[in-house]
Image (cartoon, rainbow, N blue to C red):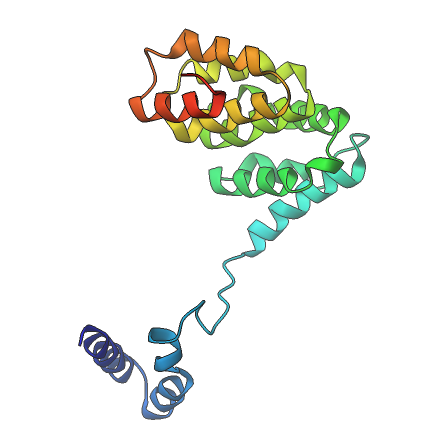
Length: 197
């Protein structure tokens, strides 16, 4: 059975890399039946957060807490964030969407120029948030973005934000402008989202 082979390979790896005491401790700590045969999630919670990701999420909290009146003391750290940390920041911000307002978005945009960023992973999250909250400075950049990307991954969040913010006609206009440019799967999915036959 394949799981027995994997288990044996793992045990050999542990024996080859650890002393006898540590090997016994590691092997005794794993409940193979729970990991392999029982339904549901693994019996161990895996925490993938890091000091940097926690700090990035805290930066979003700092902006929300400031309500657009100030930037958190450590906001300049954002300039050194790689794309994934910027995503953590934006997803943390989006998870608090009910508390986000135009002054907060304006402050963040003034600090980081997210509306004009070239990073599509950032745009995919920033622009829909701005559309939902009525931050008009992001409308034309969102239009330009959906006119330069053909992938559903980048398009759907913006079109969904337009739909959810009562801008159906604008979404249809943008879609019709770019239909010949989009990937066929994106076209099919967006037609369903927009209710177009």
